[in-house]
Image (cartoon, rainbow, N blue to C red; front, side, top):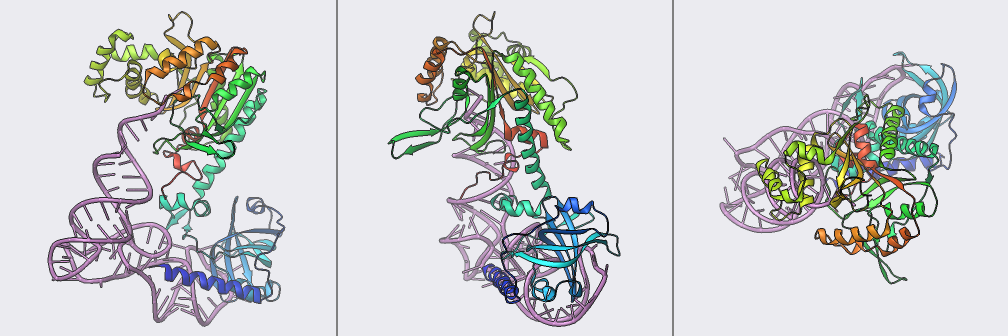
Length: 483
RNA sequence: GACCCUGUAGCUCAGUCGGUAGAGCAGCACCCUUUUAAGGUGAUGGUCGCAGGUUCGAUUCCUGCCGGGGUCACCA
């Protein structure tokens, strides 16, 4: 295999490392003082004394001189290494033994080359770390890239290499980090308290999904990885925390595709004495705040107008021209057939409606749109809407580009009602339902929960929309892959 | 879970209508004190994802498996 050749490269690089040591240099020094990051250094005037460090991304050796480009998080800068300008022996012992991918520090002075490229004329070169295993090629000229490291599998499996070579990839994750900071800013300014609730849970709940199971040896007990933070956050509302949020991982033991990773990041926030209407305003403000502050180039969320607001049942009736009534199950079935919507023949009424909704309506919600007033049957944690004969709940989902981005309720706080909903939900469908008998949560509700509005936003989906990325794997640093 | 596409050098790719493979870059040796996809000279580098089958002969055709991408299903 190629291993032989790769091994040749590796051993040759160990040899160079050895040469560097023989020249009296520490192969892995402990510290290097920089005067700034590269973008700061580039903004300085010619003649300024600087020191900077980074990874060697290109190198042109010419006997007793060499040009290299150093890269750090903020950019690239060219460095001119010349034998008689460096400290004695640095050129022969270090520069001659450098490879692409090595990490070095330089001290020197800002100058301009013949071709007017701002560069550092190095007066000292410090070796900092060896690239033993070669990096993918990355050459560019005038912004055009050659030999891109573009193999998705290799990029996901070697994210460090992806980040080094693909600037776009790095910038997505920088933006994601900024986005999460901004979310915290936004909620903190509204006096929200950030909290952490258990990931290992004896009973899972707050969503309908298959969980991951695990086991605690000492407690001799089965535990589940949470599928949502919802129920614990509500306990904190009951406890008087007033406004709480959590940003953290949820885990769902389901399929993997372009928009699903088994572990994903959720934001949930809950506000006492509030309801779904107010939460929709906060949500809209949050999204607009993020879009404004992130100065995005490719954002897929159109924030130029107020978000649309429509009603679930009205849309279903408008599209199908069938009255929303369980007695019309057959008519809706017929509608599905006529519109080649693929459903199980013995599907439940609510699943059928939801399928129609998702196929005929959701997919066309491109501009940000709040959908309000969901049927009770698919919303076991939401409060019943007044004057709806107990058929609707106070809930919205926010759709953008056909994606569900947020989900929100006026939280059900009547423990007796909640108990009944859990029980009827259980019989509604075949899903393993042991998680639904969350008696502890009911007991908590019995302590009294104020009226409360809650919202959940998938952080990965939000990233995809904000940065206009079409695969969840490109917004998660280490997405799940097979062995 | 189903279907479609895909897997050739470290990276990006070509190619063989079945006769064990090529390029650029990277790497190696030498030359080169302002280069920038640096340049020059020379020598390298591959069990063509894995396992079977058909065949005189397979990287190429067939089957299965594994990895990746995509469509769908699943997913409140």
